[in-house]
Amino acid sequence: MGEEDRFKTQRIAKRDALVQMGIDPYGHRFPDVWATEAVRSASEPLQLEPGQRSELRARVAGRIALLRVMGKLAFLTIRDGTGDLQFGLSKSELGETWAAVKQLDLGDVIGADGVVGRTRTGELTLWVDRLTVLAKSLRPPPEKWHGLTDVDLRYRQRYVDLFANPDVRDVFRQRSTMIQAIRTYLVDEGYCEVETPVLQPIYGGAAARPFTTHHNTLDIDLFLRISPELYLKRLLVGGIERVFEVSRNFRNEGISTRHNPEFTMVELYEAYADYEVMMERVEQMVSAAFHASTETVIPRRLAKIEFEVDRLDKEQGAEAATAFAKEHHLEAYRQATSGIKEGRLTGVFNGEVLDFTPPWPRLRYAALFHEHAGVDMTDIDGVRHKARELDIECSGKEDAVLVNDVFEAVVERRLIQPVFVCDYPAAICPLTRRHPEDSSLALRFEAFVSGMELGNAYTELNDPEVQEANLRRKVVGEGDETMAVMDEDFVTALEYGMPPAGGLGVGIDRLVMLLTDSPSIRDVILFPLQRPKVTGAIDGFIEGKE
RNA sequence: GGGGGUGUAGCUCAGUGGUAGAGCACCGGCCUUUUAAGCCGUAGGUCCUGGGUUCGAGUCCCAGCACCCUCACCA
Image 1 (cartoon, rainbow, N blue to C red):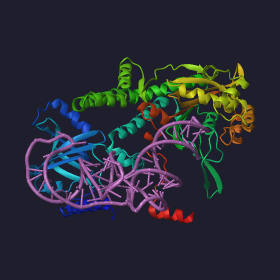
Image 2: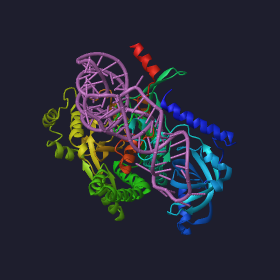
Image 3: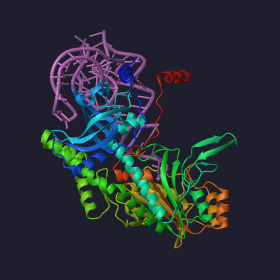
Image 4: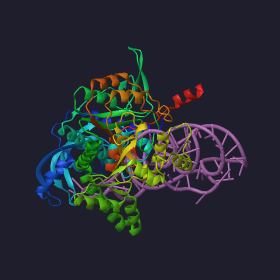
C-alpha cells in the first residue's frame, strides 16, 4: 500500500520486538511522575556544574521529541505538558534494557527513573537507570523543526498539532485559565452558574439562523440554541438574582476568521442593575482574564522573540533579524511589556498594542455614527444617500435597520482600542428597555475591540406588554435573522414580574483571540468546524449519485 | 455566493514544456557527553482530480475538489 503503511509496518515490527523482550508497549499506571518543569525548578538550588550528577532522583514521563542515539549512549529530548527535558541513557547503566532503546522512535511515550545531572555542555539531564515504555507510536510525527504547518491538517488532527507545536498547546491552556478566572470573578461577586437547554422548541435572544433537529419520542422539531438569554431571564423571575452560564451557542451562518458555527459566550444577568453596571462587569472580567494569563505571557513572548532575533542576527545577519522582528511584532510586544510593568493592561493583537485598562471609553452610537458617516442618524435621507454610496441595499428595510447597516460598514472596523458603544436604535433591540429621555433609543451597548464585537449588553426590558408587542412586531429588512420570535411562555414569565436587571454576553472565543494574539477564531477553538474529509470510495459514491 | 492564493515524498518546501529534487523523518553502517548531533550508504512519488493544447505537461489553458486570506452575511 502507501508510504504511510511502510512507516507503520516498521514501527509495528519494533513494537513486536519490545513484546519479545517482555516489555508491554502500551504501559500501565505510572505513579508519582514529575513534570519536567518540576525537575527544572528542583534542580536550580543544586547549582549543578557541567558534568556533575546529583543525588536527586526523579521519575519523568513524556513523548520523545528528539532522539540522538550514538553507539552505546543516547540522548532523548522528552516533551510533556510543561516543556522539554533531556534523558541520558547509556548501555553500561541500562544493561539488558539497552536493547529496548533501539526499538524507540520519535513520538513514543516513555517514562524513566533516574538521577538529575548536567552533561559536559551543561544541559540539564535525567540520567536514566530504569526505562518504561508507556505507548509505542505507530505513526511518524511531523518534521521536528517546523512542526505541523499545514492548516488543514492542524485542525483535522489537532492532537498532532498540540504535541508538535507547543505554542498551540499554550494558547489552549491560556483559554482554560481565562475562563476559570472569569468564573471565579463572577462566583466571588455572588453569581450562580447554571445550565439551560441547548435544545429549544423556540429559538430567541439573538438575531441568527438556527440549526434544527428532531426529537423522535416526542416527535417534535427542536432548535439548537442561538442564545441562552430567554431562559436566563426566566431564572431572574425565579429569584436567582445573579446568574450566569458559559454557553455554547449554535448559529447556522458563515464561517470566517471571527465566526465559527458553534461558539462560546459567557452570558450573565444581574437583578437591580443596569447596562452601566454591565460595563464594569466587562471591564472586570477582561481584567481578570488578563491578569490570569496575558500579563505573564506577553513578557515571556517578548523574551522569545528577542532571543530569536539575536540568534538570527548572529547566524544570518541583520536583514533576517529585522524581518523576523517585524513579522513577529517585536516593537508591539516591547510596548505592551513596558505598559504591563507600569501596571497597565496592555496586550498585542495583530501587531497592534491594545490597552484594556479600565475604564474603557463610553461613546454614543449616534455620535460615532455622525463622526464616521458624516451625517446624522436621524437624517434618513442623508443616511440613504450614504448607504447607496456604500453599495448597501436600501429597499425593503426600515430606517433603523438601514442606519445599523451603515454603522456596521463605516464605524465598527475603526473601533480598535476597547470601547463601549452606547444607546442603539430601539427598533433593532426588542429585548431592551427604551432610553428614558429618547424613546427611539435603547439602553444597549456593545463592546468593541480591534473592530470586533466582543460583548453585547442591555438594561433588560421587564415590561411584559411592551415585550409582547416587540416580539409580535416584524422588523422589516431583518429577514429570517431577527430577534423578534414570539415566545409566549417568556412573556408569561415577565407577567409574574422580572426585577429590573442588567444583562450581558461576552464572546469567549474572541476574548481569547484578543488576549492570546491569535488572528483566527479557529486558533482558539480546539476542533473548529470543517468539511469532513471524504475517502476515495465515498467520493465516487457521491459522484455516482450526481 | 464574489475576488485572490495554495495543493509536489510521512513532514517542511524547491522545481526554468524534455528521465522528479532538497532538508528532516525512515532503513542499513560507524559512534559513550549529543543539542535541529555528525559522517557514509539506501529506499521512498496517482506532482489534488478530470479534461484540453503540444511530438512531449509537475510546469501552459479550462473545469472541479479541499484548505487559507478577503469581501458579502453574521457575533
